[in-house]
Length: 279
Ligand code: DO4
Ligand code: MG
Image 1 (tube, rainbow, N blue to C red):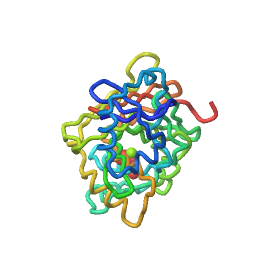
Image 2: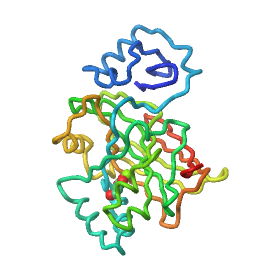
Image 3: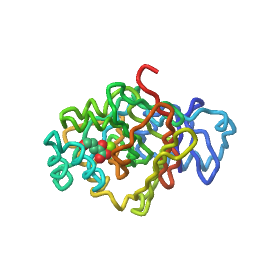
Image 4: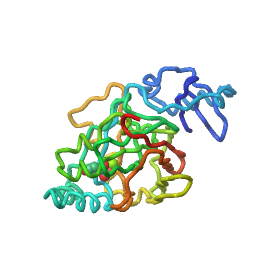
């Protein structure tokens, strides 16, 4: 079942049909004691929602925070080690890749998050910006993974590489994050064969494309959640991005007007357009 937050309210999609969800509060849905059972009862009531087609799909977020894990794929570890080598920070990435404690960082408040079709931003003081396509977990207040979405962890690699202490500036700024198009409310964890794909389209042509699968992820989503919930409460639940396994080559940087297309099997396509600060 796919759960959508739209300009006309919340909808659940099952086998190609859309049903309006009576619960209009996103936070109330996310914190439901049995989200999947509740959505199944909505589908069973079979009130088809004709107005879904006219609705604008929004980022599937209410008052949740967005957190992120890093260096969970070998590709991310290697790219970060290279970018931070001159600053003497490369070793940190190798160590965190194998450490018991993962890298977890705060990524975005809801107002910094773009939805499907929306604009994501590159910093005006960065010369080297990339998108990071990441399986993103929706976790309820009890620490249970209740759904999955596609997340874009926009990153300024030159700022991050200059000094690891600049990580928050490389990662957290207005529209540095996108989520969507929906929440996949699944009864089982996603299979390791699940593919994550990234395409960056510039002036009508593919400027970069890459793919990975969840089998390449070094850590288990449930373990990342357990670390995040140590000493932290999330009364409205939270999102947790699980890291990127796709990094464009070092000579690639995003430009205004680029279209970023990210897909994850069974969830769908998250597409955003790039703008620069001040535009
Ligand atoms: O440590 C820097 C950020 C890592 C990250 O965002 C990722 O691996 O996805
Ligand atoms: Mg990332």
